[in-house]
Amino acid sequence: MKTPSSHKIFLAFGLGLLAGAAAMFCAGLLYLRHNLVLREEFPGVTTDDLDDALENEFPAGTGWHAVREDVSMPLPRDGRALFHWRLYHRDHARTLMDDPRRGVILTPFMPANVSVTTDPDDGHAVVARLNPALLGIVFGGDAGTALKSEIAAEQSALFEAMADAIRTRKSTRKEPEP
Image 1: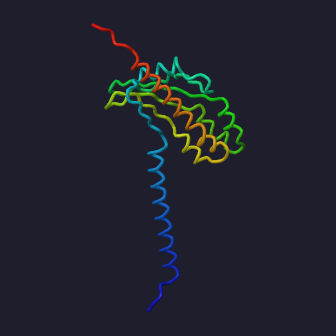
Image 2: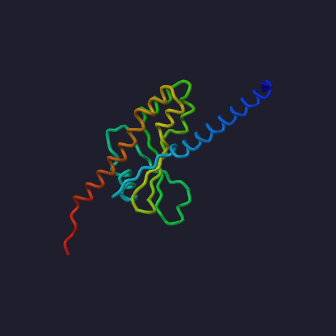
Image 3: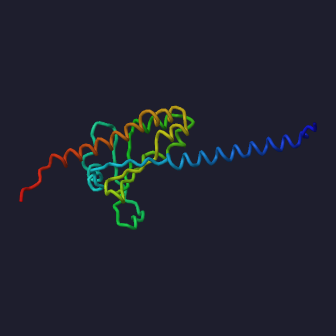
């Protein structure tokens, strides 16, 4: 029985290594594509309601602040509303900046950019934002821990609390009698 030469073994090993690296790259790309941006839907809440709540009823005492940004982005062609907001939290920003290795790298993600638009099928509000938990996994360290454990949960809770308040207000509002 003839044994393969060493250069054929190295060639097969190298090709296998390249194929594995290409598969990992494609899998990582697909994972990031579907998880980097969070899309949170709020049935029963319109885009205008959520935009108004961000402007006038942002939950006090949370440490978070919302600022509406007027950006020169093109509006969707179908006429849906699109609002852009930045969320600030001074204490979380300090935690991120205090990480000596990753703090400066994370500054482009502070403040959190949030877009509020309308679902084209159902007409309810949709919030799109970067996934802070995924950024925490990618960057690691103290900053990554803060992103994963605190910031992601707090941002989701803020939007859910505002949506619940809007739904409650709408359900308790009495319709005028004819």
